Image 1: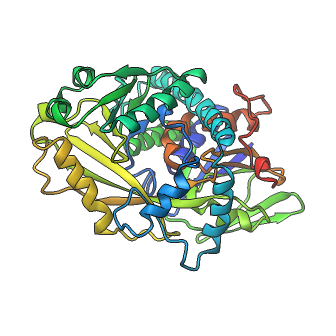
Image 2: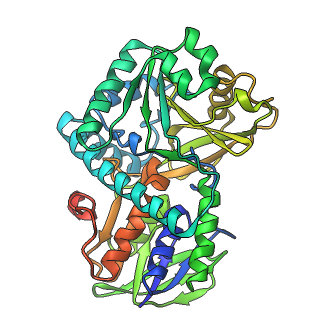
Image 3: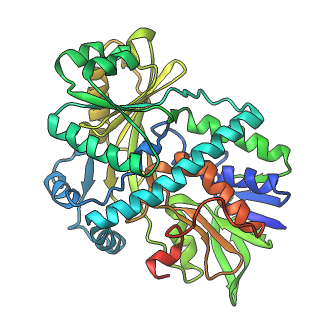
Length: 420
């Protein structure tokens, strides 16, 4: 079967490999000159099943209102501007801010994340793929007792769903990450350790996965923008691109935040809105002063990961439409907090700021699987967990394409949960 994958980020490229390994003829189309040059380019570098808690929660609307006029807030949105897609998405988001829906959505996101982590391990064992991976877990640090109590409560919920975490004292945090010694003396009240989670370079991973897919016969078409999807009846008949038309037996939409625009051609409404995330990548000049494992600062809503001799710092979310312009005001907190937490790790003279759009659903659960368009599958809407969920999502698509039942329960993961 000839399958066209639309998008060559970490999700689309991993999907291409899974399909090619399944014996399909695979063509990948992307508007960039290479893989992982948008959302997957410089993300937070975490394989973080521990971050399966959905954004929509009972306390979030009030918190977001407090942050609304704070330009450097961890979550920034401006609902007063003309933005109907944001308003529609926001109403769905609010409906998911109940305790019952938080539990449901967390379970769904964790189901995909844990499965994906297992699939990634199998891929690593099978291919010996290298991407500056660190397999020592993710350490969460807390600066206030209330936040630490909330973190422990969340950890208890995750453990019931299959993800155990270790509760740590400040001294325990230093045992796992010696570079936190100075912070532990005055600024930390405790931590949580997710020992089975990982970190690494998502862009490098995607590049290596592309090579594996090409070795299986997958063809990647670069600098080619998808203009329109055309359908007849209940099937996609062709994809019109800036370089011509392409036909195939089946199609996978993995275009991240741009998936709703393409799905609209087929009469499908995808409740995905972009959350702009920021990162910096700075050279490590004092190795022992930089983190050796990935650290999540739960108070600052930031993550710190080591990629060889580079420290990646990422965080914040801005709901500002499909605007990819980098705002220095949003970058400044990343630099300031990196200097505060790891003051001598880097000279911080060249921080390489970046921003990218993360395709976010109102319930923080991806949209996977079949649609009413018979030869179109969706692999999109992963939000901040795109890399965490990429390998598992790819195998789900490959199983469905081959007529196999996926290895995890698909209930609540499809577009049908939104009534579409």
